[in-house]
Length: 289
Image 1 (cartoon, rainbow, N blue to C red):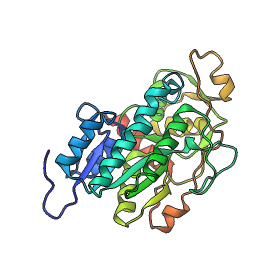
Image 2: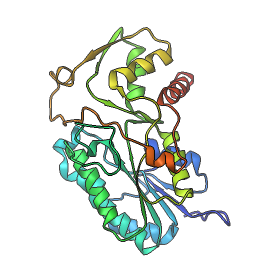
Image 3: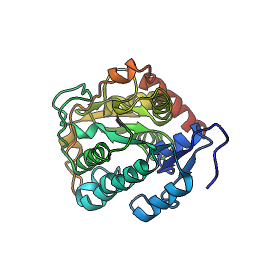
Image 4: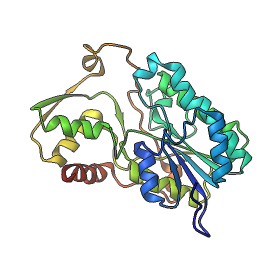
């Protein structure tokens, strides 16, 4: 494992192959960033060994099981990654007196209200949401130092909704997109910068952090991405029921309104730019690549 430069905090990033992990890798060149092949966080022995080698002061756990629908058919696998593995990470972090930054989801809320604050009632509707909440509980009860960051609708380098929409719009005249689920999109590089700022400000506990701007539906997000890409593809707004009518396999129940209130982060001096600006930048990069 590489040692950080003198005077630089030892930072470990798990899940380095995902969207958020890649964003941290770009933002923190001195960090030890490990993808799934380098560290399977469900392997407790491997986790303890890596912590002993790196001796981290800050750990960003960007590893997660995020296949929301597939989790309904694979609840044990989702739980192993999103909850059981977090117990191992939290135990190792406490042993090394490291700050564990754990990422959670808007899907821990029922979607019948919102915007949700950090103090609002949680009631996950899906296996994915339940396992993310279990991960929160594991961190809270570990006895160690932690920062739980709840976020939503993440897009960045890798597979994500915005990229799939842009790819589809390049081929099709029309795309059907759900219009009765609302939230706030979050650009992975912006999220990484914001979370590092929270850490540097000494923030601990639970914080919501999502892209700025007004809440939007998936259909509205799709329209924004298509316009940014310069395509003429039309978005056909449909209900969740209509969208999944001909889909096979288990379908997770999603919250209708999962907007998160970020007032607490804003009071700490951290506020992400409006999501439409981030979408425009991301789509431009996609078109140039």
